Length: 291
Image (cartoon, rainbow, N blue to C red):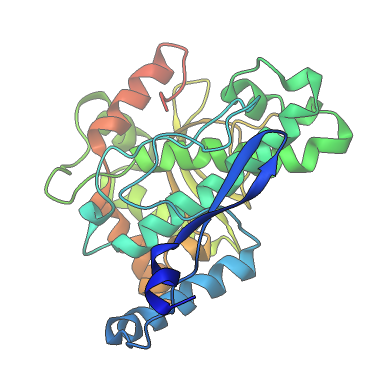
């Protein structure tokens, strides 16, 4: 067969199986052309992969800003939320690469793991995410750790994304929330100082929280791993979150490395005070933050 004839038969039928034709494409030789642009991103990719390996996360990278839902639907209950802003919207305080990986890889992994636990646990099917988190102590023993870590991870991150906004849109505390902060801590600056200390002092991975107690007073606390202060029987200081900050390394390491206090201080430049005020009003009315 001459070369021209080989090229003309670029696609051919291998055969049939159960009456269906199977068509494949003849592989074409790969180009030997090098792509210098790949080198410019190699270091960032290596750093991102290192963080993913060290924290045991998994999940498929999604092209674009963010996926609208989890790809593996089936019987799964929860899906990845769409962010209310672009990945680069929090620059220069939180970089776009970190946001992309944090959202599409880490958050997605928590959802996948939680859905896997729900699929094989009848007691969890039909429950809301908030119910699962609040009642995690009563979850069957064989999936309790998975649900605690990944149910908490899903709720915490849904909440965290909404606690932030573009630096140009953030203001300061206002109205009833500002009055409550001043009543509980003396001033907004004092509240920030105590919050920063709780976030910086959380050993290893975890979260810092500004929350509202049943008596209406505000409190600052921190939790390990993916726990949150709504987890009955687990939280040291029970409250309903008004603000939360992720201090896992995957939330800041690409930009700040080991400088967690700098990340914490810069976080206040992207706090969505309007959302925090809505949270406080919802809690006063007997509810919780809307995620």
